[in-house]
Image 1: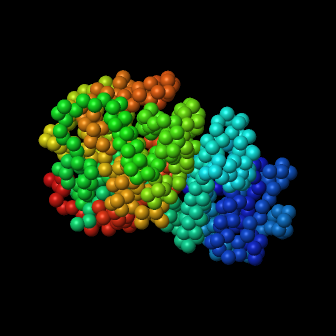
Image 2: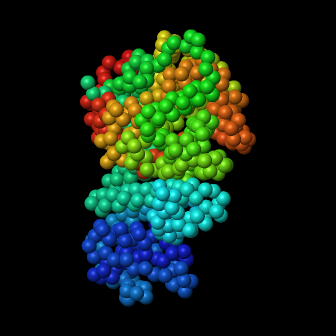
Image 3: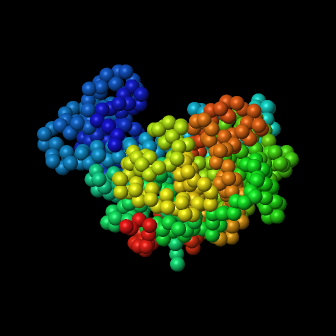
Length: 225
Length: 367
């Protein structure tokens, strides 16, 4: 499983803190926003506080914190600015420590699931700008009528740039868009399916591992021939 | 009686029986999603598998004289004829690998440019471009109608004839040989196979001595009594395992990975008429049995040399000819696809198999 004990994404991404919204206690940190958001499925009263640690000034304040260290618990004095202080002993109950360790365990599994899912879609992306390009390209392709030989000016122009017939240019884009769409949508539902299964399972390493292995089978190992 | 045609073998493992344990150890050599079925119907597995009727091994090799290239052209014409009779295009699954490139080249050679566009639908993904980019840009992109291969499951409604490039691996050898070459050197594969050598290799792969011995004895007995051609070298031994025992699994492995909602489309009529693989015919199999010298030359890069020579004659791509090695391209199409535990002779998909229901006590792994 992922090692989330250090906030490795400092200076690259915001710091995602999982909060108890009732007491403003920081329960854990999550390595990605989608992992943090998914964790909210597991328990009531969970929220996510994002701190912009891409900014040097913010990063400097939090670089030495380890929010997944159970021996230290923090509360947020303010929800938005990230002013933190150590929690009072009265707040750090056995139940809170148990809840924190469960959330850290689930964060490990959800983040690992997310990483394995994201790895799978890499194989159909041939251009880093594709996510930005896709909506426009899909719109252009949908305006074409290949059966009647009708293509938009843009598709015709792109075909001339490539020096290929316009119908081939259309088909190549359509092939790529269909492949990306099918792979990404399957990827998304596999993530949702197993994240939900994990949310219904008790916070037990072996039981969560079994669900994770089933996800891996569906993502990767069923393809082995 | 319902029998298995293909099964995910980790769903069948049963560590309470010694026969199934010995049988199951072969999966330290081959992949867990592979099921081995004897096309000669002599070796009995511990589970009830049926050898599909289309796959009986051809045995009459007398007078067979077709070259590999002639087999390819004969097969392409047969499929064109089928496409003309059904008035349906051929959805050719193209990965950019050796098998699918050769298949497409053969159609390019025999069809006019217009008929190639109209009759052949090249089903591919962005990965197919990477695997043989020069061929894609010079030929596929300019001459063919293309479509995403990820739409596979939506093409099973008899609107097209599905054509895969399966079974060429089984004609030419086995990817296990790459492991043998890596461990013992290229020359080792052309030496006579011996019990000591095969068992040593199987144990290196992790089989116990007992399992390695029973698998060797079963295959050795099978070769000596039922093989219609000479099998004498290490190369031949592993080719035979692939050619005779893996053939059926290879045929069905695309079909069993379709989307769950498309499973109702799969019946005997569909399988017989709308689902084909290029290299499956009797004459390709006879070519394989009669021409062991044309399968590999000098190194693993020379594997499938006969196929690569025909590709080179067509596209003159020396880099691909000299350096392209086999890889399991098809598995990328199968990413994120569901896989049932089994598929049976009643065209039934079983998602959760009851292994005791298919246990076969009279098998070749009891001693």
